[in-house]
Length: 558
Ligand SMILES: Cc1cc2nc3c(=O)[nH]c(=O)nc-3n(C[C@H](O)[C@H](O)[C@H](O)COP(=O)(O)OP(=O)(O)OC[C@H]3O[C@@H](n4cnc5c(N)ncnc54)[C@H](O)[C@@H]3O)c2cc1C
Image (cartoon, rainbow, N blue to C red):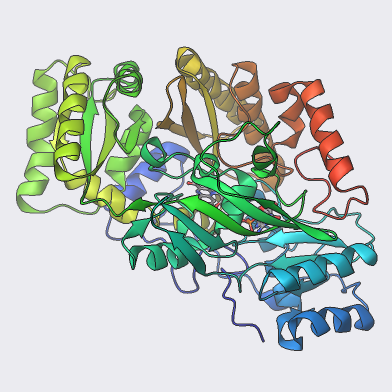
């Protein structure tokens, strides 16, 4: 059996790792107040039983499996039910609810793990000749519904897992470019780069379980995008296997060779072929990397400060501000403090804020990161501090920033914990021009409240701004509520209301989670019906037999 490791079949991350709140005394009271769920008395659902799951029989014939085995070796092809289930969904809330609720409509029929590009080419050619469907699989971490086969798919579905292609192939030190195999997950590639003094600078919250090929295929963005760019900026070249040949885009700093094919592949979610290698720009591991925390008296002041930073000479690596509700959440999920730190956080700081005339219910916490040479990082901080001060904010040092940095990859486990307790906790994110951000925030809150009223539940929503650009930024919303009796139906009401509020307020359907089938119903409102027609023509022309991950991005009536 292949050595590729996968996440839990029923949830996020590694077996045996989960979210705990026993060391966070403010968490249970916070959840009670926010969604009416009493964690101290609620019963936690146990791990679902795989034996109870109904998985349709594989449609792959023995002859076809043998053909694939001849390409990759018998131990790297499988029709095993567990592997087929693992490759069915990503990790959206909808995916987790369905998999835990025994609602698997269509799984891939066979999972195949090629070792190199030549094997990927042979699989693609064999699959297209047999009119099979190919769904490339990276880490399986997407939350856009980008992996699941169409429930009515009659053809054989192959999940083509890139998990054996995980090497940094070469580094061009003179140009700061690294060739990386598409199946390399964040920790794989960063360790290999760090060993030679380089970093990719791309750290999505899913870093530990997502791949560079998946990042490109979904147009991912990491928390340090303000300095390093989104993956769309970081990816300079790539190789993508298509029927009969490999599309090669050399890494060029810029080019005017017609409409950008690179941009067409970015965000293509497996619909145009299988990415086997990505050339990314890399940077020397910074001498200094600090994340400082600041407080602002309110959301509007904080947003205005972030905007001014984005147009100033300061170039921080992270600009993030939580609204008042998310600030409350952040403080509630802090670990128990002791001694001087407890006294400062719970007595000195609130007293100082009150003296400034701040309403403690409105305060917003912000994290701003500085990276580079010592003198550079110092200068960035000086420039930024002056802007923060101008907008009434105050710095509180590095302590909270260090904690934020340490727990960033643990937060994903929280969603599974809430689900165990019978509650939904999920996210929707968007981007809009600076001039629209306050309205987007207001309208999304109103839409979510209307959805909660319709269901008849006490719901929660909170937000932060991150990923700043010259003309605007990303707003990230987290929402939660306790299910009544129809988890998927109720989830859809809230999620749909938020997505609709985005497009109604001139914001995009997703800043960095892609489209898949989760956001495809709003695509025409995002890029116009003519935009969808151009995209459809691209998919039809590049994939006339609809063999590559059909039905994703453009709604196929799932
Ligand atoms: C808890 C959590 C936190 C997250 N945080 C972030 C975040 O901070 N930033 C962010 O951008 N995203 C985030 N995501 C979303 C997700 O991690 C990204 O979409 C990621 O880029 C997916 O990569 P993957 O390797 O897991 O791809 P997969 O989920 O395996 O695949 C996603 C899509 O890409 C296609 N694909 C994958 N590999 C290839 C390939 N080699 N060739 C062609 N097509 C391919 C698949 O067919 C599918 O359509 C988060 C998700 C979760 C669950």
